[in-house]
Image 1 (cartoon, rainbow, N blue to C red):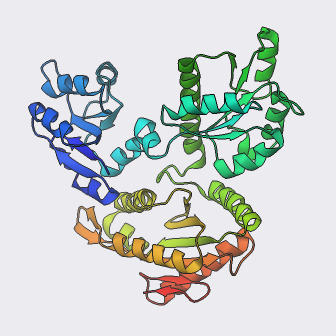
Image 2: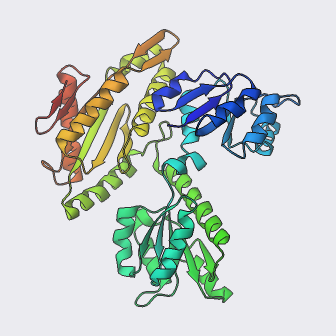
Image 3: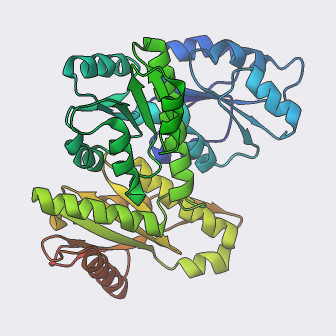
Length: 409
């Protein structure tokens, strides 16, 4: 993963999340460090004083890479100075590694690693490909649908961050299609942006009543299209993460993970593809809280969450199921391969050092795995994986067991 340039911040633990921290001790060293290779972010400690050379250097480099300021100050003037310096964010000192990882998982850095997805619904193929080309130039991933009746399946498979839709199409107009989409609770929040030659203001305003986010009049300029799409899609992705995620770990919460499991299950059954579910539980976690305190326990939970998130494949789903229990939904994966993956994760996590006021310690987890080879409903998948998780605990912990006999000790 591209490096993070740091001005002497103690962030060696970032390597555990797949980053390559590079420490830079003087602003003069920045030019050479940035020239050595692709840099994902610049992290700068600053008190925002008038003579702060780091802040001045950051103002210059913020045009090239995202700059995150770290400071003991949290007052309005410090936040304003961050904005005026072009900073991507202001983080509190002392800085925990997972807080920086959280920041990097939003905004420009996040979309570089997981590009925004736009579903283009336009009956004129040539026009749809024109829009797709413009958006692709800005790093967005697109999928084109020319037939309205194909949209629900396309949404299910593609999981768009925004739907760019023509208002007037034969057989089913855009407003009718928007209302069809809004009938489904899980799709209610996806922003829909209309494209049309319609210029009547009252008609444009009527579309807002049915959950349409905005209206662009054809012909639309490329910069207007890109700005409207990126702004709305990025905002939706961020708000969705707040609503659907556990507040401590940033992973999907129980209800949203289960809802997404249902979606993946139906897709796997329809397309006759494998699907696996894994349940993970931290070993002896009560002892961690009793010995080191609940704050350290929370840090261990966050560390595992970020560890899993940084190592997931595209399409994998990870959630906090409750307490110290986590769940993974693994599309296109059978039980054997799922156990292999979980065991590699188990081994790597057990090697991480956890920090506390009583010194450093290591933490392990156990896991249970099930798959569509033995279960055909979401309830059965979770029950079987949970059963194997507790068998793994009873067999000595720090191991992975599968419902059909796959085992990793």
